[in-house]
Image (cartoon, rainbow, N blue to C red; front, side, top):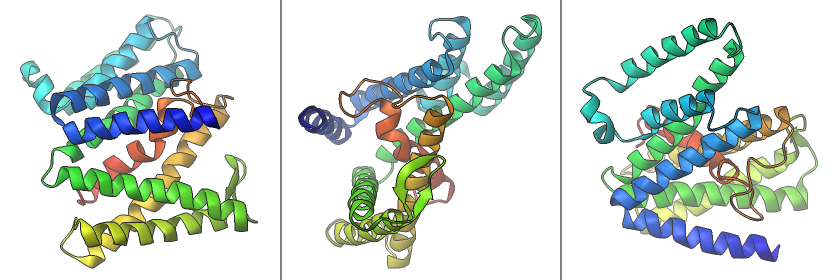
Length: 261
């Protein structure tokens, strides 16, 4: 527990510092975290990160994670290039006579979308108008949801939420996390307004809280499928990067798609 607290304080303070600083340092940190996240997924799948398969996964990831300005020298649309690389990747399964399987190709594509777009829109959110306030708003909701679900679940939880994926999570904890996030979120916007409409604010809080819990379950499903306890050991006492950012990288693309960013 002591190690967990020390790691949390140091890593949390450093992370918040980079968010406040913004600019290139923040972009570099986000890309680095995305690369580590992909590394963790490759290790789960037992794909060597420095193999051709692993390096291909990192290439896909960078294509999706990097800001558009960073790849503008290619003079090609990001999505079109991504589709072209998918075709090449599928062709590679034939050229290797299935030593590189369709299953592995699918894993590389889905993993790069999951991690790449997640961190891409994390960066994107920081640089929109009022981006710093928006980032802290989202972080407060996610952290409030996690903490609320944990404490309410421990004190009142009886009915399992999804025992096949995450045995300790309860329905009562999930609802408690949403309600506490709603309260914390409303207090936050009272001092630091994010949206002009209160209805929009409430919708945003509920969306982030619910989607954040779903993102946590998605990561739990990955780990259960690949029979690992944590995605990695980068953060002593906290597991890997994906263990810490699972909610955020799931929320960010969704938040963008529904027009709340």
